[in-house]
Amino acid sequence: MQLVETHAHIYSDKFKDDIVEVIERSREQGVEKIYMPNIDSESIDAMLELEHRYPGYCVPMMGLHPCSVDQNFEKELYVVEDWLNKRDFVAIGEMGTDLYWDKTYFAQQKEAFNIQSKWAIEKDRPIVIHCRESIDETIALVSDLKTEKFRGIFHCFSGSVDQANQIIELGFLLGIGGVSTFKNGGLEPVLEAIALDHLVLETDSPYLAPVPHRGKRNEPAFLELVADKIAAVKNITKDEVAKATTENAYRIFN
Image (cartoon, rainbow, N blue to C red; front, side):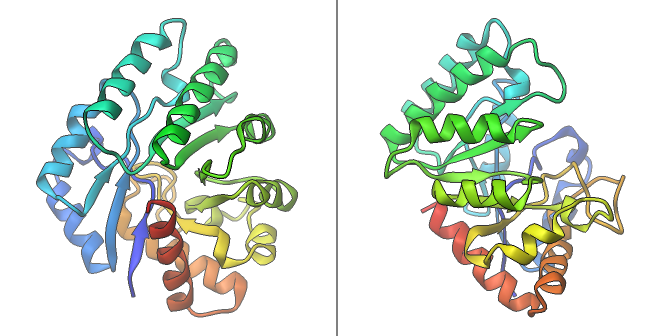
């Protein structure tokens, strides 16, 4: 069984003492690649160092997380743009919108979203979207920018079947993670209704660990538990989930 981890912050300080063991467990559980979303200028060095230590296995993206957007976000975007012009990245992310923590800079978040999206279209790269408490607003942003090349993943999807279908209609995939295993996660109707063709797996490590590890540090080795949940809901084998979601991941990341 081969799994692809499409979203893990394994360069986080939370892994600094045992990253070797984390990677070993990941490989043992069939995870054959880990895609790493960037946060802001302060996370770049650690992310690229992990890429250097595990070339071809830990794969970086480049982008500006909405929770790092404030009145000076242009300075952060200059750093992102500079890196995008210096070398190739598989995707632009993690980017998006967030109305959960702070609504103060939502206008700036939308501007940063549009700028990064246009870079993605120009460079023919997918975007990886964070949209906490802001799915409808983000769907509207994507709709306004829609072109044939515009594609990506709505990371940590936690919306409704209707929202899922709107996202799929726009040509985007749904990132399914540990929330799918939560008793009140609300994702079972989505997993029942949406075909495997539109799903990819993620953990968002070190956050949102799946049951039975909920509340503890998450890691890519737990990706199998997400695959287990999807297989159980759809009444199919875990291998079927792994095969389809792995193909989807490689297709979106080219």
